[in-house]
Amino acid sequence: MLDTTLATAFIPSTNLKWNVTGANWSFLLPSLELEQIVCLGTTRLPTLATLSRIGRDVAVICANARQLHQTGEAIRHSGAANIRLMIANGHGTLPLVGGSADLVLVSGGNARRLNRDRALRAELERVLKPAGLIYFEFGGPIAQLFGRGATDNFIEGWGAPRVFWLTPLAGEMHTAVLLRDHETIGYFLRHALYSPPIRLRVFKRAERYLGRRLVYSRFARRCGALVGRTAHSIDAPPQYLRSIAQAAGIDISRHRWGLSATGEYSSRKVLFFLFNRAGNSPEYIVKMVRDPALNPRLENEYRALARLHEKGIGDRETLPQAVFFGQHGGLAIVGETMIDGVPFRQRTRATAGCSYVRAAIDWLIDLGAATADRTSAAPAQVASGLETLFRRFVQVYRLAPPHRDFLADQIAAIGRSREAFPLVFQHGDPGAWNVVVTRSGRVAFLDWEAAEPQGLPLWDLFYFLRSYCVGAARARGTRNRLAGFAQHFLAESPLSQLVIESTRRYCERIALPAHLVEPLFHTCWMHRALKESTRLTPAKLESGHYVSLLRLCIEQRDAPTLNRLFSLE
Image (cartoon, rainbow, N blue to C red; front, side):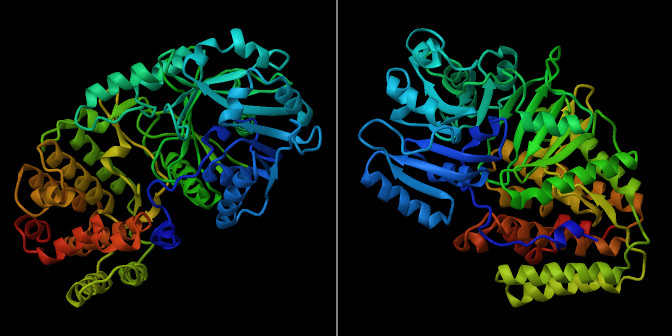
């Protein structure tokens, strides 16, 4: 029971916002297992951290002693042991053995020198292995000249370059598509799979319009290039992806592709969208972790999708099909069929009568009914697992004694139940953001990395309804998430009636005793607060959304909607 959850260490501050790994462009390389990497020019610490993982030896060529000292201090704090610093000598030669580098990263002012400095080019040719690559970025008016004029001085003599359209216009790269692949770039623009160069929070339409104009403007766009002496497969996805797919009998060598590495957290996956040459929509989506520590999450998604497929749950329109899985460079990679749909939040009317929210609720209820298992765990075993979570919870959060006693009593009430306790297959993260509406009007739940094959009933339903109610309240002007929750889960409203009706139907379908609704409700938010703690600094722990929500529900458990929810007949 709750195998994934109980195996997770919920450590505060381990998944903080903006603490994201660097060098997203490295996922464009043919391989992420390199011997020597050379960095020429100023290199950000997050980039160096990533390069130190994919390369056995990373040589950073500093322009002067001051830059060497500053970079050395940053590296010492990072703990990377395979990064060595050097100073370029005054004769224009690099202090490196010839033919030793798998990859040379040219950044900053050095990238601008590539067009005019023949001595630099000669040095790059000298240190590069026969199959080695150089990566650099360029933009502005130079972008439209790439392959013409001044840039020819650098390109001439190298194998055919791979040039990518990148977003945003500065900083860490989030989006990469081959520059000449206008169809895929168009798909990324239409589906907002790029990082806009400007943020206009109040004027979203203006942001989208200006963003599209800027990121693909011939004069403003940002590009990245991979060049080398050996011609690589110009249009094909990276070799490491092709190899993993081929091992499963799937040939993606002729697929168009684009990379999306957006996200404010390192836990967000790197995504490859793979298009059949004749298709307008992706055939496959490939997910990849940024850090080996996150491998278990993606491995869990692969197992979950395979198990659901074996059970006959869903179909190709409503459930991704896992088609290949493997590791490269220590990172887990899973390929899935792409669900063709529109984000749920763009289709819903944010009302109790919305057909799409009712379809999503039905899907979750059907999933629970199809997978309900009344024999695998006795109520006492379920209570024991929740007690483990409770002990972790009180180690992380400070609870007032009445709140602590109340939660302990709720868990004990499950243990005292004399009726069979049905475990169900849990999605684990069924927020409205993980739902799409298909072309035929059906709904599909995505991102199964938090799935629990033997999970707890109602948790998925409560979590989805919370996200929907908060979104509905926001659509009507309530920006505070806790206040939006209270409007529909505590006070009475048409949506609160939907919460009660949905919970009643769920309990009837899986034969869940009504007296277990209340303890499952409160322990659901206890679990979500534990998960949220990894994204919170110590200073913000006690004001976290889910721990605040849990306290609110305990204090107002006699509120009209909760009173009706906990007294279902």
